[in-house]
Image 1 (spheres, rainbow, N blue to C red):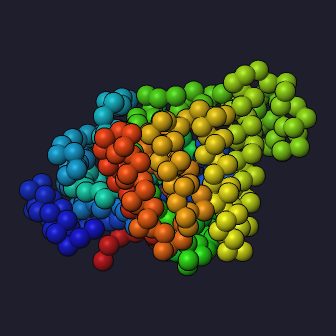
Image 2: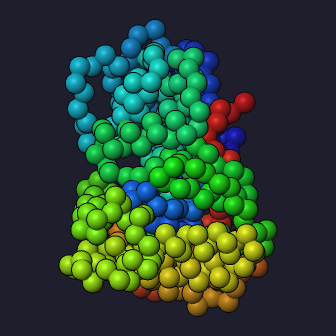
Length: 380
C-alpha cells in the first residue's frame, strides 16, 4: 500500500473518530495448487501475497462497531449486544461474523474502523479472508486481547461458515494469518499444520484476473462441498482425504455421476499437492508446472468450477515460452488464474494474456506478478 493510500485511510478514519488509530495488515492469498480440497480435510499449497487489506481502528466507549470501506464507499455498523443477530446479506456480515466469533473467545469493546484493500474483490485471491483477518486483528487489539495466528484463522472460518453462510474450509484464513515471505505454505487442513515451502528464486508467480466476479455463497460452491461429502459417505470414508489413489481406482466406479468425477478431482488433487511440494523443494519447476496444468484440467472437467474466461487465459498462458504451468485459482466460476513461469518470461506472458483476452472478450485482464508475503500483523 502506498503512502498516499495510507494517508487516505488515515483521513477517512479521522472523519469517524477523534482518536488516534492503530493500523493492521492482512494479506490476500493465491493458491498455487490444491483447490476444493480444504473442506475435505485435504492438502493445499497457497501463499500469502503482497496485496493486503489495511485496517485503521480505535476503540469506542460504547458497544457499537462502525466500519467504513473506502473501496466500496460505504459504511455500516452493528452492536455487540444485539440479541440473536441475523446476517444482512451484505459485506458487513464478514465483520459482524468475525466479531461474533471473537466474542466467544475474548471480551470485546466497540470500535471504529476504516478499511482499504489492494486485494481485488471477487478475483479468487481471498479478499474476504484478508478482510476478516484485518478486522479480527484490529478488534482483538483494541480490546487488549491476543490470540495465536491459527486461532485467528479459525475465527475467520467460523465467521464464514456460521454467519455469512459459505461452507468454506480454512485454507484462505490460514494463508493470510500464517504467511511467510518467499514461501508457499503446505497446509494439512485436517491437522491445520502449516509447513513453509521455499519458492525457487528463479520462479515468477503471475496472477491474471478475468474481471468476472463470483459470489461463492450464491454459487455452486456449497453444492460441490455437499457432493464431495456424499461421495465420501458412499465410499465409507470420513472425507475424501481418506481415499487413496489406489482405493479410488478400485472403487470409484461404484459412485454415480457426477459424484465419481467430483471424488476423482479431490483424490487426485491431494496427490498433486504433495507432488508439487516435492518438485518445488527440488527446484523442478517443470514438474511443478505439469501438476498445475493437470489441476486446472481436473477442475474444468471433473469438478466443473472453471469458466470460459478462465480457460481462455490458461490456454493462452500455456503457449508462452518459459511458462511451466497455469491453472484457475480460488473457488472458481470466475476470478483469476495463477501462472508459474521463468522471471524472464513475465513480459511475454503478460502480452500474450492481454492479446488473447482482448481478442475473445474485448477487454484487458489485470495481469500482475505477485510475491509471497508475511501474514497478518500490526503495522508499526
